Image (tube, rainbow, N blue to C red; front, side, top):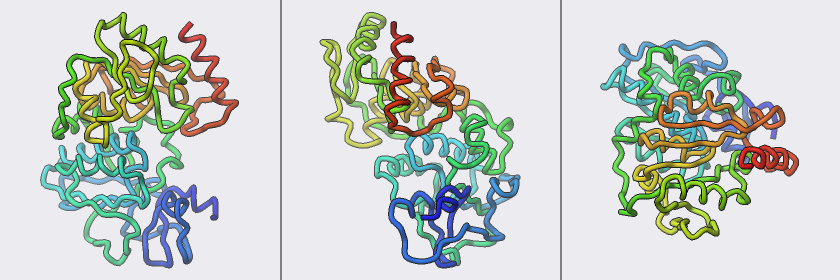
Length: 328
């Protein structure tokens, strides 16, 4: 597969007709010719700056948005929430990338009060309505400003909105307060979520017992989580967290959240849960700037800065030393 296409700052066009995502074609190589999506009625802020007055439009279609991970998606939906706050009557169609994990897609169904129509790639470009505003948000990881501005502001900017015009409360993922999530009646508990989608952003298991001991003394209540920790005050409740809705419900009813740079951080912010988050690669000001109840701690260094995904042994060992110093 052509690396330039896989890292293209936008979506792709298959056989001159079907819009596909670089993520999707990397998962399952299609048969046919691929080219960058270049269509005069589809805006792409990575290529040409976009400004949209959402007060004046009736429909917007967002193509290949809003990321392939759960955390990115939660933040991206907050940008759609911002659009609805500007114009409650606007109709939002979101066309998602193909081949994403089910647990990621579940968050979009939780946002049905914001997203009016949910579709998936591949998408026939002839069905794009040229009278609507159409914005390509594909392959955001490779956009120039993805690593330079706070992530809510990244989405807003690239949807044609001045981030300064949006209330900070929306950037706290407050749309989650309107979702109907379950309450498992677990009593009072601290939630410990040390694992991200990649090891480089996770808290190594060798420190879990120490953290649970610290939390037990600090709060005096049981500590729950989704992995095994050999501590008498820790309880693994992974059996009841069967989907994203359940996961969100468990976070919503915690009295405190201890986590890493992961989806738990963004869910906790949306439910106004006091949080302590350990960042290892991405600077906190790029992720938790608007999370008023989050205490963010950065323990990364020049070797790990800006790395979004890695299982590299050398990098993990570098971070282990940082963790050892932090928990000493």
